[in-house]
Length: 317
Image (cartoon, rainbow, N blue to C red; front, side, top):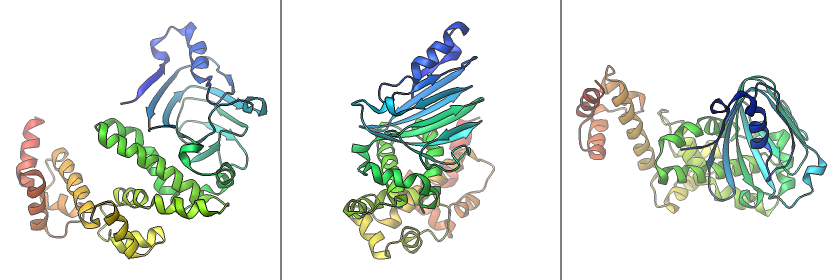
């Protein structure tokens, strides 16, 4: 669950501007802050592990301007991957192109000047990571800023970041910690794949994040009937053998990993859709044989799909 850093709905009108201003004045990334009335804001925070955070900010308007004078400090060097979700926000930063588009990723090097402002009720979220945790040279990250959309990982990471707050809220502590770690690795892989700077760090980094990238791709394409080693290899520019070896290194089998996630998805859908037939649910999760689906479902959950659907429906009445 997130920590709510600020919710001005709980404050008197006269205290809101000052409260938002105080919340935005960060000792980690100093900047000039401007907050116009009515100063409605809600800021939520999730820790993604050492040196990594997720922030979600709903605001009626504010402006953050970081100049060269703000960079003269001993604060941690950080990078932000932002996603404007609604409203109207703009950013001017280095060679960032299209920084005012809702639903598009914004990579911001927080060791550089920038100007970011929100002009109406808007929702913005960002993953912020220390460079020491990211493992990418600052110059390499800067070179990725105007090239981000060219990365084959762009859409994958965009969708992941969009869904991240809701998924984190639904998970228990252990799965949430695993997802948090995977999120940092996906950001790392995205920046590395878009960087114009090469070096020994690049190959080591891409090899180290392959399992995370493969499993994230699987989660977002679970219903695809052709989801397997051949498709994964083509999507990530590696061999089929490398795909299998990457899972084996983690003590996993690709087919069983996909099977578990599909069964989990079907399990949820059966509980939420009592009017849908078991056969239809099985087909929607890429099970060609309903009998095979029923057998694997029973092995996983100790009851048949029909029994589970009836039990879930009775509970929700």
